[in-house]
Image (cartoon, rainbow, N blue to C red; front, side, top):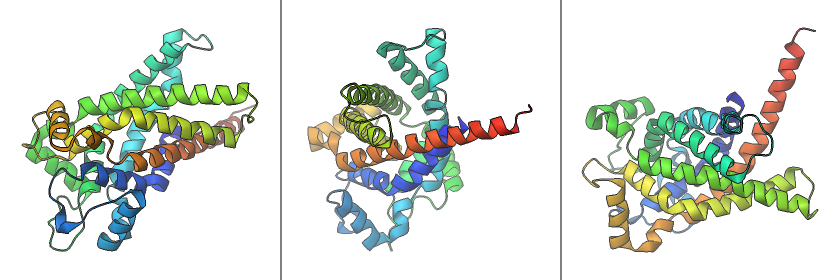
Length: 289
């Protein structure tokens, strides 16, 4: 769990600007543009943010993001093998359904713990640092406190349903697709089981996962970022998007989502394996003969 949490934090630090760009693109069109600013594309969004708000704006919500990964990834990834072994009774080579079930279980457990950190992260990423524009929150702990005081516990767990749905889709699609792509590459001797193979498998899994999970991800982002009276529920949020902006609204921010998820997968899995290996070596060295 410690290895997974640390690796996810490393991946978050590297890919966080892409995640922030994704959030800005996903909420665009929800309300009138502040200061007439419109975002176009991944790198256009990043350059616009740097020009109008400064480079630090790309890392709005990083503290909450790291808190989220320590809670979320440590459970979702760190407990995955344990839960998989629990369902199989310790048998090797579990089937696809067992993998999906294990992914859904750890994903749902992780969301139930980490949801408040995700709400704060998204709201920080969505707020603009412009002169003359009131800031919604000024600090991470102040954001937790203000959300609790203004919206209650329900505010901190706002968007749990779409987030559980999203992470069930992400977990299952990501893990199963990664395994299938990797197995196909190795079976046809296109690459050996090393970093290039992991890189291609992770990016392929990231693309498929983004296609499937993007609509739920956009609804989750908008609903968690919304003030208390804007949407009645996550379903109402989705219906409002469909009727006002059309079906393409569900794929806003697709490219940064794909770039972020693909690169995040690569950095996280490589870091995870290295940290886990180093911890195991350290434990063997410290163990008495």
